[in-house]
Amino acid sequence: MSMSRRQFLQVMAIASANGLLPQSVFAQRQQSADPYEIPNFGQIRLLHFTDCHAQLLPLYYREPQVNLGLNDRQGKVPHLVGHAFLKHFNIQMNTPAAYAFTHLNYVKAAQKYGKVGGFAHLATLIKRLRETYGREKTLLLDGGDTWQGSGTAYWTRGQDMVGACNQLGVDIMTGHWEFTYPAAEVLANLKQFQGEFLAQNVKVKEEALFVGAAAFNELTGHAFKPYAIRDLSGVRVAVIGQAFPYTPIANPARFIPDWTFGIQETEMQQLVNQIRHQEKPNIVIVISHNGMDVDLKMASRVTGIDAILGGHTHDGVPQPTTVKNRDGVTLVSNAGSNGKFLGVLDFAVNKGKVTAYQYHLLPIFSNLLAPDEEMQTYIDKVRAPYLAKLNEKLAVTEQLLYRRGNFNGTFDQLICNALREQNDAQIALSPGFRWGTTLLPGQPITLEAVLNQTCITYPETYVRNLSGQAIKTLLEAVGDNLFNNDPYLQQGGDMVRTGGLNYVCEPTQAIHKRISNLTLDDGTALDMNKQYKVTGWATVANQSSGKPIWEVVVDYLRAHQTVKLDKINLPQLIGVEANFEAYT
Image 1 (spheres, one colour):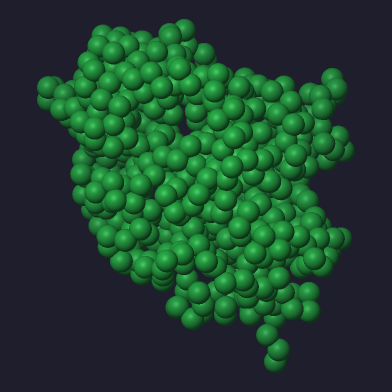
Image 2 (cartoon, rainbow, N blue to C red):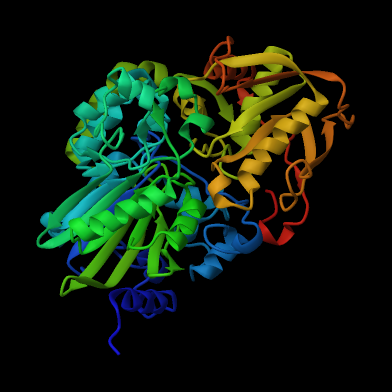
């Protein structure tokens, strides 16, 4: 009996997972003189980056030591960190790959291997990979979260990043934080974008269509083009866009009042079926901003997709996960964040069908890649009007400042401390964003560094009185979003950060049973009936009236000059001890 295309792809994926096909170039060739020398494979090449969060310059970005996967996700990709990650992907300790993909020995490794990312360095690698393969056989895909995350993106309303992506040659993108600008600005930026913006799961509300709101397709209600077909030297590729499903919940709906979002699994299956039937593609790809756990579930339930190139959860995964469904398998990858990685997926096609693939996730080491002159010129020009402000030195850090991780990071704690001191509050709450760059001990904390942690379009702070019960309920709600058993009910991100407040967390419990033993820093138990003065920022439902969070942090840093944290408000975790590495 002959082997079907999907059966063959499944066999090839299993072979890859067992080392019979090329693995990550950095895992196998860590001592290579040129780790970016990738052998050409197949007939088409897809280049993928995601979640760069407007970071145009090389940077430091520490990967998490806590990325909990619960129930059937425990101990599986993408919920592997540190030593477990290295073991799973066969990466040696104290190598460039170990530095790129884990938090281990981070400061020493960062000092040895240098900064990562930077659009000028990324541009050099992209040009090389396209030119050596054949530009006409490649696509450059951007998974979104591109226009937000820096001072210059905020001040230019994302236009600096639109120009950078045009310079980079992005062919197709989808989005998430792009929708935290007002809809008119989103549409204006997309008019300047030279690629295609795709989102099959963003619709225009019926009442908005009735009064003349713009839509890509008034009949279907799609706000944006749902998919694109590209012919790459005779190989027909379909690319479907999947924007972040929970934008109006995780971010202010007031910015995009006419648009609805959602996972829309049924519509995705119908669209894939339609494309397969009408367009006759050789390959179907989804460029997704679901988050990897959501992508893994979708891949198990929606058939006809060859690969999902994902983002949102910032997981840097060296090899795709092979997901079985009733019609075969789908590859699911996630390409990290902050311009730190570039995914390279090559497909071999024979007689119109996929027969094999090769995947690499390449860390962008800025000291190994010369900056592209055209991109560097663009970056210098777009940053020039703001340099004096961005380079203002506010303080110096004596310790590593980072954010990424399910629970409090040191830069998050700094923000919480600033909120409490500047607003004379007992407790501070700060959102569990996964973006935000890292500072090494001894580095100056500039205004740009602060903006890299705080720059959003709803930065206003608040001070209000909340009961102990209200605080516990809030933590329970966020915890359920993060640790819900159903990936489709997870909105991504990490746990809200707390300042002045400690607690015990049992992630495997149900809602209202995860959070207990809440205490203030002096050990006093939180009284459920007592009111506490609480400060925070980034309210979603209603706009607050306080000054922007970066002004609060700047005032705090100017007053202190040196940062050395006495305490980090990390929860005590129960029931997941084997699923993370000890706090450091």
